[in-house]
Each structure stands twice: as C-alpha cells, then as structure tokens.
Length: 366
Ligand SMILES: Nc1ncnc2c1ncn2[C@@H]1O[C@H](COP(=O)(O)OP(=O)(O)OP(=O)(O)O)[C@@H](O)[C@H]1O
Image (tube, rainbow, N blue to C red; front, side):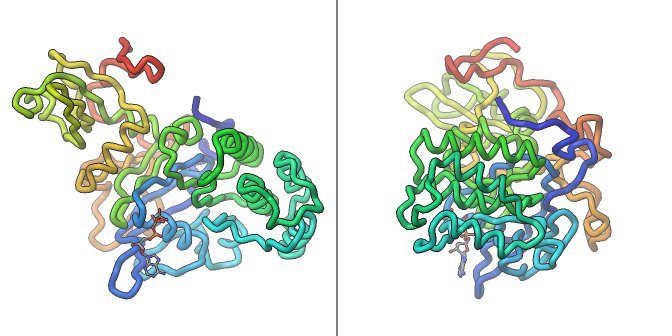
C-alpha cells in the first residue's frame, strides 16, 4: 500500500511544484558532485531519493535547502530560491548527522527550536512527536537512542511546519521496529499537514510501502524521475531460459537495463517498447526493489524522466537550446483530474501483461 493523503491536502489537483531544478550542478574544485540535473517534484508527494554512495544525494539536499549554492543552473523550492527568506521558510532539512546539542535536555531542545523559529512554531506538534518517541522531557539528548534522536530531529523539523521536508538517511542505523514507527509517524504528519517529503535511503525494499514518487541519481545526474507506479509500469521483469548467454531476440528488442543469469536461466529488467511478446518466458512487473537494483547495477542505462517530473516553469521553456520535452519522452500536458501531467501511461502496449505477486514471487494474470 502506498501512502497518500487526499488530493486537496497534497495539492495534486493544483499541480503545484515542490522542487524544480534546471541544469543544476555543483562542483567541488574540479569534480562535479551533481551535474546537469533537471527535474520537477510535484507538491504533496512522498519521494524516495535513491542512488549509490557519492551519487550526489546529500549535495542535492544541501542545494535545495540553501546550505550551498549551485555552480551552475538553478533550483527553486515552491517557486522561491532556497537561500531567500521565502525559500528558507518553506524547507526543513534533517541532515545525516541530525545535529542536536547532546548536553541539552529534550525540553531545552524544544525551547531552543521555538526561540529560533518565532512566529512559526507548532509546539503541540513537536510535543506529540516527542511523546511518540517515549522520551522524557528531562533526558539529555546525548543519552537518547538513535531512534529517539531521529524522532527529536523530526519533531523540530515538523514543528516548523515546512512545505518541504528533506530527510537525509533518516532510517539509517535504526532497528526494524523503530523504522516502522518513524515512517508511520512521518506519513501521518505529512498527510495531516500536506507536507512534501523527500527521503534518501538505502533500504530499497522499505521504500515501496512509504513513497509514491521516485528520484534516482547516479554519477551526479538524474537517471529516473517520476511516479513510482508510472516508472515501474514502463518496465518489465522477464524470466526464462537463455541460449548461450543470449536473451531471446523478442526480449532483447526492448531496452535491456540489466540481465542476471543463473545456470540456464536469465532474469532481465527491460524498459518496454510496447508489450513484451509472449514466448517461453514469464513477463511480470518488477518490484520497486528489483527495478532499483537493476538501475544501480547498470550505471550507463539511459535516463527516464516521466512527464510529471519535467519542469513546467517559463524558465525551462525559455532556456536557450531547450527543445520542448525531454528527449525520448512525451510532452508534458496540463495536470489531469488526478494531477498527473500529460496522462502518460508508460510506453504503448499497456501493462506488461502480468502483474508480479510480491508475496509468492510469481506472475499473475492482470
Ligand atoms: N565538500 C566537498 N568537497 C569535495 N567533494 C565533495 C564535497 N561534498 C561532496 N563531495 C563529493 O561529491 C560527490 C557527491 O557527494 P554526496 O555526498 O552528495 O553523495 P551522496 O549520494 O549523498 O553519497 P552518500 O550516499 O555516500 O552519502 C562525492 O564524490 C563526494 O565525494
């Protein structure tokens, strides 16, 4: 089950934009941490930011929260530059180290949060999150568990009532039960306040139940962007027997992202060019984890930016040399009744033919 609040709360129907990056890049000396990064994140989504170590996730967060400035290109949060007062008011950023003062108590930390955020501090919200973590108000921050520190960081972030919450590896190092509590709280708070959340994580399997939007970075560039359902629907997982290591021509005719072989059997993740032809193989829909692993194993696979993730601002349309639409993808249209732009349904040919049953690991007729 994917999360979601109603369209009214999330702003889907209005087609609002949480983040828009155009040609965004950041260089450290001669090395690019992020390069030519162009995407849009619609407001109201719970978005997974995925990529291998060093892909540029932290750099993207730091640019979107105004901690650092771009070396090239632009990024806007809710239409404002991140390093302006309007931008800062919209964004809360929980960095990987969750910087908290270990000598302060929980109560002192919340008081400091209120003093640093005059006029926009929801103390009740902060206290509710702290209660959820069952942490005594008099406890020193340095004595809290990792999960409690994460919840305290989230309490400070939510109490600022941001439109956009950036969470860098919030689940790292937490045990499964605490991860479950943290994500449940996060989803409940985001739904209640209509907050857009971007969450980086290596826990690929767990993202599936939490997020409805996907950004995948690799080598400092955006490689996949779009609604998780749309991105998954554009691919197929094909399982069968190979002949001398070669995929059947009807399978190889699609854009092969990754192939794994075991004995005489292959498993291939392909980006479909229409429906995968029937044959002596099984075609199912990949799980999010299978899709992400395929892209992480194949750093040179072509990028896929779904229409909903294509910038919509005039700055993008006016950009010199910009052609309408991102190469290889259909053009963005106005938001439809569900807020989806352009009504993109993935490549022609409908669904992959069968759906993957994640519990049995088998394909089932759609
Ligand atoms: N301040 C800096 N000075 C020099 N290089 C940097 C700096 N910050 C980041 N980099 C480099 O930029 C690249 C992207 O780093 P970034 O931290 O954004 O990646 P990441 O995807 O968050 O990685 P991880 O998942 O390991 O945290 C890396 O090669 C990193 O070494």
